[in-house]
Image (cartoon, rainbow over all chains, first blue to last red; front, side, top):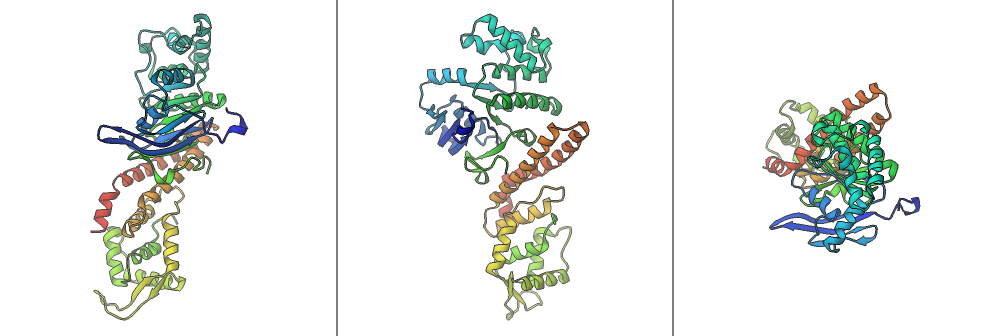
Length: 238
Length: 177
């Protein structure tokens, strides 16, 4: 999939995506194509529809009209059970805060996706420990989330999102609750790992300094991609 | 030349229709000149240069609201020059704001796509921020801090662009009143 010959085939794409909540039109026709291994920042003012776009891309929400394809397969029409399986197998998620299970140690938090995916406990613990090590948290495995700093907790959350080697990582304001320095450390660690592994990243943020870590950005405004940003290949390195 | 471009801004005012030097100065001061009103001499010198460049024509003839009788009109060449100015983003710098503000106001006066020019500028800014971020990631602490300094300044511009984009309707009402 991240084969160089296939780089032009999008890993994730939307066509005329529309989604309303009651009378509020959150998305009003979004066309977007994301290449394998790309890191794309989704920016826009509060209420512009950027989180709705992320949830539709991740198969959490189903659009009213239009479609989402992942790896060439239309996922927006799949039943919830199949989408749920896809999320577990192919997608990773990082949110702004409150995502670690408070009663479990850092290590146990990271093992969860592996156990849910059917990995046995011993190999799951081994892989989780390796991921904590990659994020500089080798000595924090037995700590509870409340015993970790904000930046450490967020790195545990990133390790948990990446432990299953997802094809796509969805990150919704992943550094939103951290100060500048801790935020940068989390981003640098996260993007270092995903670029090495060829993982595609959808990074929702309102912060330009965070978005500057991406290959390109799209701007959502009033449920549409902003005109200067329309199209799939507006030039990652233009 | 990242500071406000007086010559092209006057050309932009003429883009809304033929006008006199006196009226142009009044319009300019009302829209842009609260702290730096134009001198009449500067207006006429600029208009003469624009005529010479082929961007405007001297119509002459009837009297306007002011004392002068020279009336100017934008040429197709002038309009092309104006469009190019409006939709060419500036190199990010600390002194960029006034030129960008002028472009935005002129685009609104001409009923052109002000949102697009702000987007183009935003792309230019984000591209520069990506370069600085790459440089920073590969750099020593000194480079990191210098890049951070530049990044924070560009971010301030971006915030202004964001806010202006969100208030375009309000600005349109104010400038076209």
